[in-house]
Length: 212
Image (cartoon, rainbow, N blue to C red; front, side, top):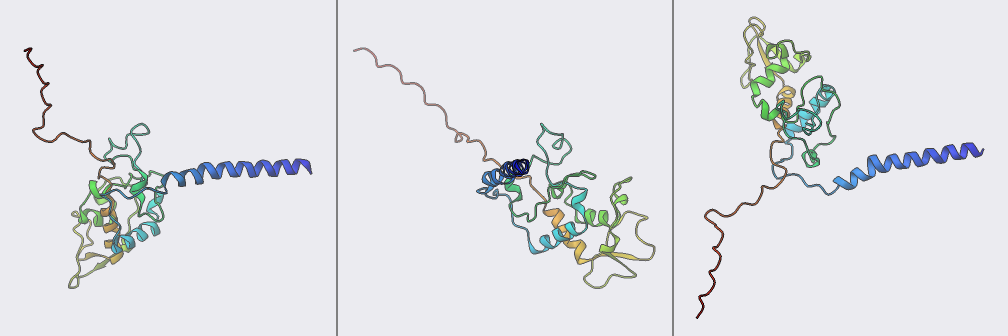
């Protein structure tokens, strides 16, 4: 019986220490973090696109957490500065990810702002990145004989549009692209260094008074 009590006590202590280190302390550190000035809340369309991003498992192959240069060459890859807690203020749930089968997407809206590129890349990734292993998402599009009034069609590279057809993005595809375009954490996270006013110069030292 004594051994069981010691085992249970040890397990509870271990659980308490782990909870304090992994839950309580991080919460204390970030609970008062405010959103940076350059960060805007997601629009309704971007939130719908975010839901589509989650539903299609994009988080399993893409992170949203560029690392500091001491941990990896993310900045040299063009993925942006290392993220800070405030960058995720409006993210519920957070989509940090743990796998990089594809590139980090936290700043894809900066690297690739083109709506046409994103739509075409979702329809057929290999039309834009030869050898890409990303799956295509044709079910986010409708293939028609002719676009209806008000519908936009994909501008695909030669050879990728079905012969005699047009490819029309669904509302889900359009919202997903709006979400991807919103991923922009390129704003500064620290205030700029104070600078002297233009024309300001140090006052010359006063000359000693002449002896009378």
